[in-house]
Image (cartoon, rainbow, N blue to C red; front, side):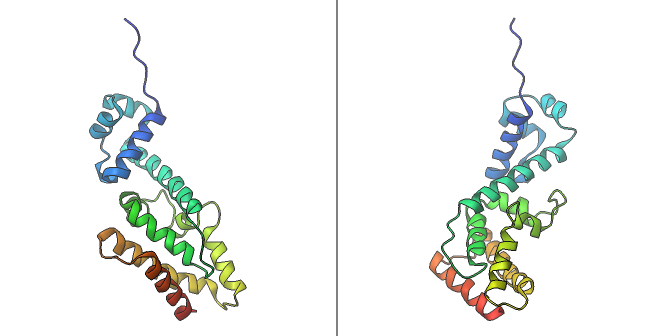
Length: 181
């Protein structure tokens, strides 16, 4: 009898990410993951110590996914923080389950919301520097005010309470920037 091919950690991680993206992180249980990956629970626990470790892996994949989403998002606005806000709100609208796991959950693999948003490319720092170059005296304080506004809008988007189109959203973000500045 031929030996059965073993499932890899990469395949299990990919299945867990797909589940979290489609159904939410809370649905990534050992049994459901085993079914999604086409294996028993044994390979999962051979490759991971526990489900928290699986979830940590999913969060890392989600972080990378968000960074790629942000990098690919069109940057058409000249006002600081507007492109950042548009991308963040769009991510909340399009990837509700990943948004919840990354930005609303308590477990972020030891990262702050700021670190997740800033990413490897320094997305927030670039916007802070743009505001500083425009003459803003306290661009970090301005970012904090914009962040509260942007995060609130994104939270409204995942609950279905945000129905503004892109034009209206740009207007709100530009208006907030000018008012907070």
